[in-house]
Image (cartoon, rainbow, N blue to C red):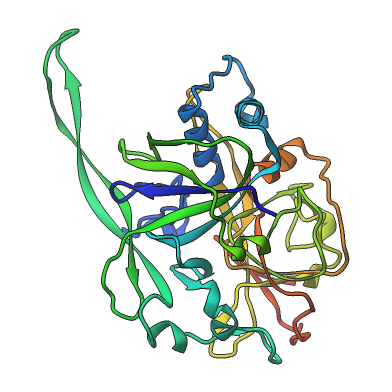
Length: 367
């Protein structure tokens, strides 16, 4: 049972930029941003709200800074593992919760069985219910903004524009899928801690802020959230956040469980079912690069990892308490990465396994 709900209510559209990655899909003008604050960002916001300070000289490459902040937040907030599970999208009044079903689309949990069809030969998406009534689904769009770099002249002088230093950044806007009208939404996490807080903190870049507060009225749907850091029961799950994976060598060509850390809670390769598609096409397995953000305490950017994206379908075959031999993976699990929403207690029908492809930023790899 979830202890509390942690709510991130934006005061203004948030700038949640992802680290640029070279490659054909990133050479154009299309911005790459996170749609929802990620666990490392939320952990940093919790640490700032609680006045947590960590020492210098921590190894950011091994995520020692994340572990240090998580430990101090856990001590001050009386937390259990996993500390966080999520994220989900929520209406401003918290009466509707949404899970990701595509790259830019979230569906209400009350309609998830109608939107995400599991009881068919091929699990697939039916977007019809999204456009039948307001509040059924939320579309996420990225809007570009122009920023101007400033400098201060003198120790107490006024800030002035640095000539020639304009830049472009992106913010995320939520809108109702059926009405196409922008609407305020919050991000929520299940918080397994005993403490309470309520305040405005910086979230993401460009000095954007959000109200961060706990809510004791926990929606029943959050009981379906699961994480490998705790016991997983058999069933079909939908990833609500990124699932970090680390290759065991540099010669990995496909998604094979024995060649990756981070998927220890699965039994077979086909348990990674993939992203559901519209129109009855087989789910597609996709691997992306995941930036873990900037370490404020150490003044440097954290590493990138490979990851399965949100909305990936996964199949857990038997009850399991998982561990990973990679400390960084365990740290990420503990703060909320690899969180999943349970869709069914039984397996989805076996789908056609031939010609399954794994999509990456460099193309597709048949598995």
